[in-house]
Amino acid sequence: MKPVWFLVISLFFQDTLATALTVTDVKVSVTADSAAAARDQALTKAHALAFQKLVKENFPDNSPPSPPEDLLIDMVTNFSIDREKTTPQSYAASLTFHFDDSHVQDWLRQDFASSESSTAPFKKEENRIKITADYSTFADWKHIKKTLERLPGVEKVNIISLSPQSADLEIAYRGEMPDLQHHLNQEDLTLVPQGQAWQISLNKPPSRSQVIY
Image (tube, rainbow, N blue to C red; front, side):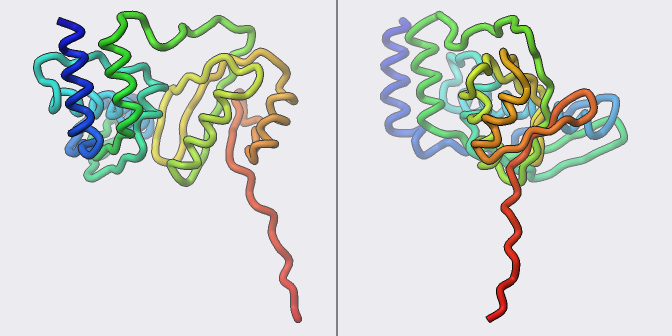
């Protein structure tokens, strides 16, 4: 049955998924120690719920599992919070997600073509570094994440929480921090100490002095 179902998926996506990648009314509710923690957890959870809803609406009889968190983040091109409600220890919201069609297709084809996992396990490395990423746009976040993933010595980027303005990460890194900072600076990113962790952000453009003619 799997080859037949895989063929159905391929044909279906060619005609439908390429233009039907918006998922609306994704509801999520989380209770935590604080409103901020609940919000971070809820937004991370909402990504998986949005993917499940996307697949369920198109394949209600045979839904594949959700992809790993880091791969799922790459599938989302943007998301917006339509409604939200916050209490001192809870957060609830309704969101809209937009998915990249090619990434979704790749995951579903791979899932039905092979039972092997598409993601290598998290390797135990000597250094696990906690980093908070600050950004103003979703494009800036993707630049930060992609840069970290391809840097020499970075074995894994694990997303702990995600919001429209910041993300908490843990990376497995084999190397010296000055080297990591140097490589990031070459990509227009700054990595600085922040308490027991680190903070990464885009370099601010140099201010230009006013020229009077």
